[in-house]
Image (tube, rainbow, N blue to C red; front, side, top):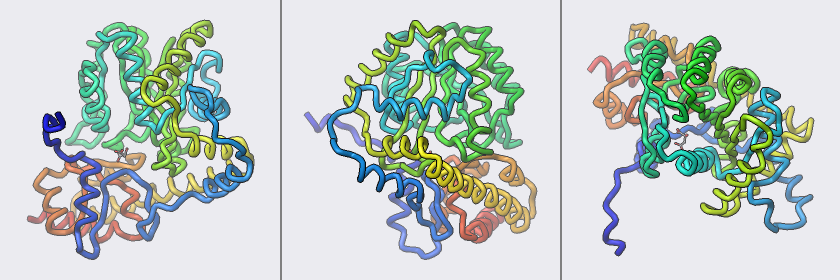
Length: 395
Ligand code: LMR
């Protein structure tokens, strides 16, 4: 039977890491998968996480199961961190999931279960797994214009024009902050206009927030999502702790469903917990317990927020330095937008051939659509990278 499996192409993001690992060249730079890197190119464990792990080790007395929907303290802390007080707590059904991807998967499952006719509207471009997972599950997709490649900014006119075709109970996926892969984000007024359109069409917004704290700040990055949540009857949210807590491999995240009234909560929460049961029973506990400990302890929370601020400021500095360096070395202002973008990624607007030349001739590993992980350029690596881009552009 297993011979029926067909070969599958490498993952567009993770496949790059394998190529990078096999490259013997010194000076190679990995700008692929979205993990934070320090000046030495390492992805350290955050100090607050290390301390919380010690606390967990000392206080944990059992490894018996937790509730199917996940740990209550974790779910409450995540709801507060993401939604603030934009909606009443008793309207929000939350399940703990294995990372943000797990949350997206579970919410896709929910959509398929409650309205298999729904069209999922995805930005063009978006994170490849948004598309791949929906295709894998047979969910109907339509894309909306999002990025103006020529200007490297949001094509808001095109987006609003395309979204006029949304139908009641369609699902509109938005990136809560730090759009992946472009780094170009809607402003508050644009979020407000999209909210008006959602209310007019009867579509339900689905916010993927995987980079809270990586853009302008923990509160700032959630502000638009919260304003929308305060105005719409229903909303889905997938939240991840992979990046802002650096808990990538521990798989920590949650899926939230905001109900229009509190009396729907019990049924929605139970259905979402059953989705956990159907797929993997219980989400992993360790990383979620670490997050709960940090968010509940004043001292650890302050330490974590300080570390998060440092990561964000590092990326903002790199953005500015890279834009300056590319302007200097390439003698063009076409990359100036990098300084204005927010989050972990920007799309450089290079052709496939140029991306390939960067990799093959210069050992610079950029995702095929010319997305770079900004954090991969810490420690002054933006200088050799800009030099390689300049050479490739010069042909
Ligand atoms: C990325 O976009 O690089 C991250 O979200 C990691 C992943 O799983 O793709």
